[in-house]
Length: 254
Image 1: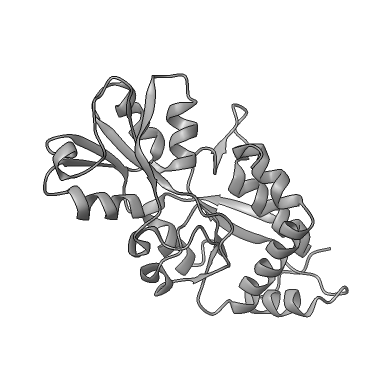
Image 2 (image 1 turned 180 degrees about the vertical axis):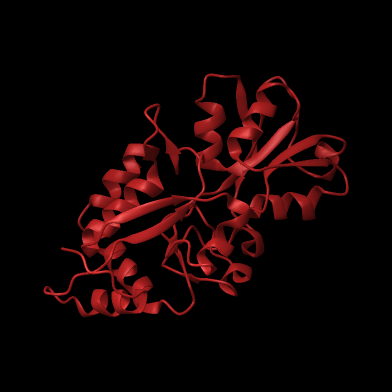
């Protein structure tokens, strides 16, 4: 028997840890596809690191996750419009977003990287080596901000709604290079079998102005109790080995 309580009551209940209280399911916004973080199986089911970890966090708290698919461009407005109660979609924690949302503790900190076809000769990315090239990024991401600011004056920057759309243009030769979260580029390009790709230069994690502090779960600013409950659950999953098992499923053993 589930009573639909207000979100504020949910947060208070979770922190209090009352065994007798009943709470409603939590709706979590997610942008799909972004393999291996969030994508659909051939049968149409949502899966990925974020999905599995999010379900495990909800199980630890004692609630159910309902996943709501939302395009990246509207994912924060959707949270503010109460279409869902949280965002767990590979969202980098940074100061600009902190002005709009409340973040959980970081749950993973992936680097970004440049990817290019193996037969494209690009040296260490710089104004000189990228000049005149066509570069791909996902619209509205930190990678978009970084490439636009650093190389927008010397290269053509193509922006895509999804990483899959970007990969299609890479496969068809319409992009010289793409800049992505490394796990996403590894999964969608290096391991896809659709083409022959390589990493160009070193993995990038600086400056923090762009690359932030890792991925966090985003909540509305007022939902501090709900964020605290997820932080407590995350700490538990890291201490009991559950986090490492999920991580190994998608990224291999450390």
